Image (cartoon, rainbow, N blue to C red):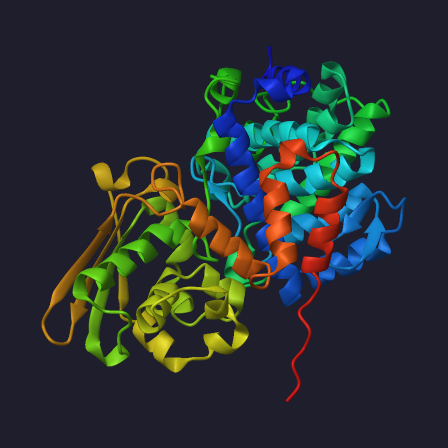
Length: 470
């Protein structure tokens, strides 16, 4: 059978009781993290264009437009929520596929789940089907989409959203196969934003989530799609990744080996490909007993970088030293490493527009030299799960090395529950009864009768923070 057929039959036949406890817990953790990222973006007004367009699309009031107090069609809501989750680049990443899994799963699950009045257990089951789909489809061709200038989150995420929507709409396997086939014709997501610092990448998960719902609705209305959409001669891999991929590469171990448990929670609101380097910088500072440094005290910073990461977060070097926009900075390893050294942390405030103008950060970033690893253990495996190593050369003659086996937040170096809760609370605007209640309900999603309370809480918490006037 084709990969789409296997995925559709598995997803539509999946029952809540089929999910191991660790898979349910992992999915709830990631959904909570995704909610937090969306709340922070809503409070910061970071997804304004998507929300404006979503509010103007009209349609039946099926789902909430978070942070507005309004409702719209499920398609419009998914566009808005997908953009909110990804707007600050603080959402999770599956290292094997280099995809932002929750950014395409949560919007579709929330929008369609609310539309049909699904129970929490049904939404959680659909979400797991979506996680498995996007992670597996992307990981079957590691870095291939990015290598062709495409954002794997959108290219693969549209199929994931179609699976989520198909499951929640109660489509049978044959119709779900058609939904996947239709979804594949909407795959895309150009990485050209890297050349200009534009924010189009923020929209990609919104596009994917909305298009996946459209694909499921079109299939339900009778539209047909090729079941060879993934591995066919003109399918996703051949056309967009330049690869030949067998169906078994996508579906091997489906329902037994769970990719949902292998998604990384981000501790930094920046591109995952430089997280190992940032962790290595933090480790070097710890070894040296430094909470932060003065720019004048650093002669040079040398960072080893995986070859697949270099073209995205290190090149062109001149542009990375002086980012033009917050999104530019989030994809600059030299600038972000310099900010970490000077500030002692990398947070949402690091990438605020006012922060980019600091000459001392650009000055130090110019002394961050990257060395592309080639061969040996340093370059093995996927870029997002590579080790990190930096060498700090200080003016007093010391050379301090920082090494980490991989970045924090993934399955082998997980972010603990306390750290995850702290991240969510900060993204929700600080400790408050409503934030605590939302976290409790998302962690216990399987027991919720529907999404009504969760959506109401998220809607209120995502509203822009009031301006403070002197």
